Image 1: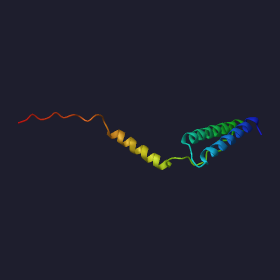
Image 2 (image 1 turned 45 degrees about the horizontal axis):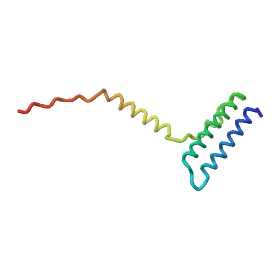
Image 3 (image 1 turned 45 degrees about the vertical axis):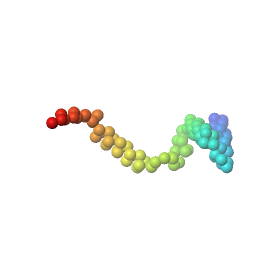
Image 4 (image 1 turned 135 degrees about the horizontal axis):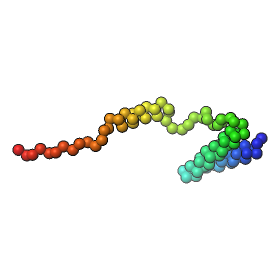
Length: 101
């Protein structure tokens, strides 16, 4: 195994173990969980980059489900946002009050 891939794998395993410790206890600290999640993401990216440099293969994590809204929902929301932006042409004109009769 490549030394760089081996080192990246070791870092990824370490990050995953720390993440499991942070989120697997009775009480979960949000800050610790967020930090651990960020370290897992960074380690996974580093591993994927090492694999790509050595083998030319793509990211082994690409087919994983991404958290968040479904793509169809995101497309629908973007279209709605764009339609609203097109229909708003600027500030609403202020009308002068009529003179009392």
